[in-house]
Image 1 (cartoon, chains in turn brown, yellow):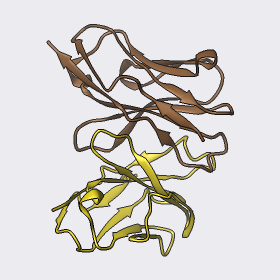
Image 2 (cartoon, chains in turn yellow, red; image 1 turned 45 degrees about the vertical axis):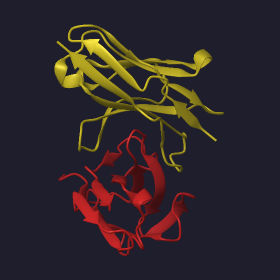
Image 3 (cartoon, chains in turn red, orange; image 1 turned 180 degrees about the horizontal axis):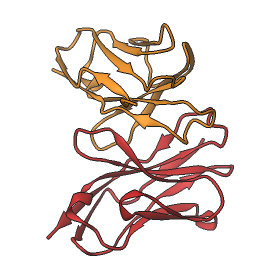
Image 4 (cartoon, one colour; image 1 turned 90 degrees about the vertical axis):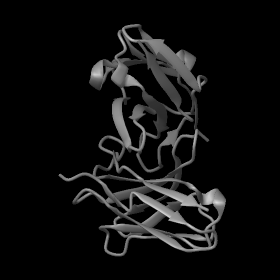
Length: 114
Length: 115
């Protein structure tokens, strides 16, 4: 069965610093990979997704992620963090067919300090 | 496109009571998912519908849980004889495309607190 691991439960970065959130997946086939963000009391908002093609994908709010098949990773990056980026970030994996539900990691909580 | 709507936003109940949540998907979305999210965890799949047919249920969905989507539009999730362990955020999501992840939209969730 597929699974997603987000090794970092909580990360604190200074505003303006760069950010990298880690995600590793376990999956037998080519995965569909996603990053979602959740602000307190809110639903999930899609930041970006990878289906195929270019392994570096761009998303909203200045985020990008790189798919590395050899490392089974899909890390999220942002070159300069803003205070409004403080939130919970979830990595998720799905099947090509779309007939099975997304499997989410446990999330990484991002705190931003001045 | 008004988004996925969930009602109520918050529900406080006493242990042993029954609760029902409602999800209104985006119009014409044929797939509807229910997820549960506990504190410090990612969303966990509960069940999903293709139109009115319930196609898959997670083992997390005990016999106290039941979900319906009677006309392929809105869906309800009922929990009978609630337990404190049921306290969680219940998220609904909907999509239209066959490869349903491409445009999957989440609602803001119903936060359940069982006292």
